[in-house]
Length: 204
Image (cartoon, rainbow, N blue to C red):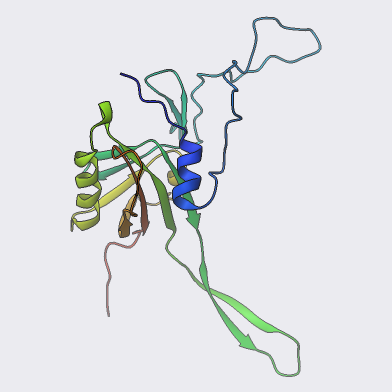
């Protein structure tokens, strides 16, 4: 049995906004055709191409039915994969602490960068049960990632663009919003985590 659903509509309904990339409705034709013309360059990345980051980490994968799945991510605990999230979007928030010092008889302030804050990731997505079964196992895995006291790592082509020193993160919140009158085997969630670069703190 094959379950057919529109992730774009689900995402917009549960989270109140559209994902960054929306596939046009009814666009099931390949990105390239076998017929080539001399004045039109051939597409070097047709559908089914795996795109890699500078670190040689894949940005996308090919699903069980041949569809492109972009920016999946994985959570690891003690170097063991706990869960892979395919149907999701990832937002990144970067901030830094700036010390501002007023200067006498001059406009503005003298600014000095004190430190770069932790990188904060917000992952919004769905856990989807196979064969229309409630995704209990995946919910428990996400709960375990949130509650564990062991080191947690976030992997994926997109998040690892920012996690250059270490892939360790701390999961700060996890939400499963209420769902009314919808398919019980599709559960939306929002997970927030932040980088954990500093592992040892020395106080002198």
